[in-house]
Amino acid sequence: MSNSIVITVPHRLGVEEAKRRIAEQLEHLRRDYIDKLAYSEVNWDADTADLRVVALGQTVTGKICVMSDSLRIEVQLPWILAALTDKIQGVLKSKAEESLRIGYTPPKV
Image 1 (cartoon, rainbow, N blue to C red):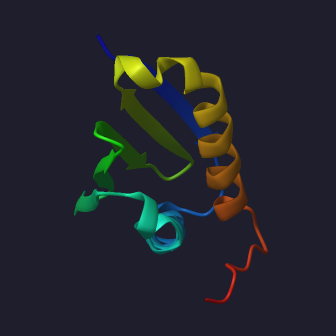
Image 2: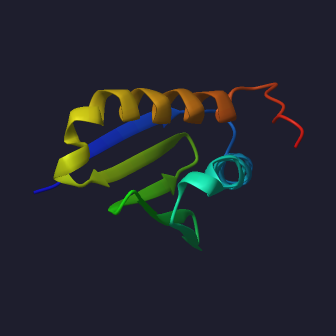
Image 3: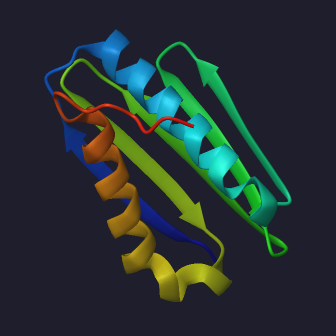
């Protein structure tokens, strides 16, 4: 049995700019945590990203839908990670809001 997280984050960036920022943030996260992940992938189909992350023998799947005025993030956690739902939800929301904030400059790598 899995546990679902659904987050909606409003923005005023339009689809293309929001998508660019989210794609950039996803790539930063993948680079920053690559040594902790067994596998990760992001596949874009138009304005929707399908994600799959495998770590510590657990698979987490997700979907990010970029709309003109909001972002919808859906994540499916395996039951073993259900106890971390609130913490994961908080981190996802914080990172998404930070990426979409007007004037945000991503960190230099």
